[in-house]
Image (cartoon, rainbow, N blue to C red):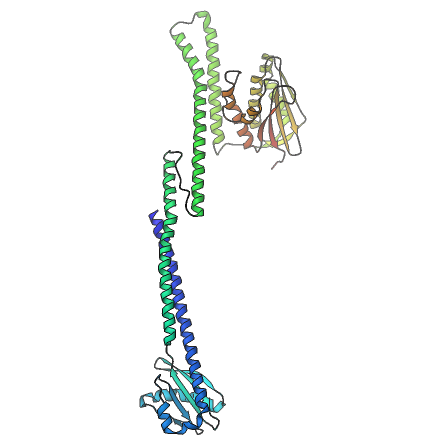
Length: 454
């Protein structure tokens, strides 16, 4: 973050320096304008005073005395015939010629004339006043850049600006460190998170936006820890699910290899091997389905689907298994047309029906019902099994939670079926919810899809 700190410092100093230079230039220009206005005012006052004493201007002695002042001012008298009178050094005749025109113009128009004359790059302030008895007087003074008072004022202002520049430089250095230090600590924490550390302390100080970044990084740390925890739990669940059938397969395989199974027991061992192999196959298929659901290219092809027909087809497909377990299988409900992928709808429904059959004891029933409301349409699968508690309804769609909870007390599946069902429904814009059965014990799972075709 040293580069960021230096860039912030350089940018801050550049802005402050530019502002100081602009303020200094503006101050000098204003001071120059104020000095010019002040000098012009003094020259106007002098010219007016001399005009009131015009009777005394005819004497050569007076012209010699006031013709050229110590401040470089020049007095020129133009009589009624246009003759110019002054007492000055020969080298100033060019100046006299330059300002005499203003006097003749004032005498002609009988009004005061205020103007400037440029003499070898120096600006002369010129004030011409007509005389009551004809002619005019002209008073001229070189315009200095700044008066002494103005120079003192500008000097003080520039000192203040330089002090402000120094203070701003210190503030910029402090600000750059104030911003860069928590950013550097936050970047270091992010690198530690990227290398697999969790619970990394993140600085809480710093400006608002830097604090927001730090807060987001802390939230990311917590989310990563939770996600990795869920992944570990899921992997443990997968290991447990696979270990049981694989242990059975290995045990019976070793028994067959060692000749411990009598000839009349081979068919039974074969059935066990087939059953455990089917469990592994089903679990592997569920894992692959979850992987496909996480992929961006998972395809959904919506068409017009009658959910009542899908419910009837599912009931017919599962009726043989239901009859073998002495479970009554029914399908009901009015036509309910939506736009969805029929293959994915059937996939969700098959998973819900399989769970219902597993949870329902002999003599029970599973009912598949299609429905439609103003906002949605869907299919409900209701069984007469042991049912779910309120906590079970809350955790029903978490991977493997219910399977782990009831592994020792009732028949459970892989623990992935409901997770797959809810993800499939979400891909079609719908959802799956778990409820208590409407009548008696049991559970009710509902696939709900939006009624809109959008």
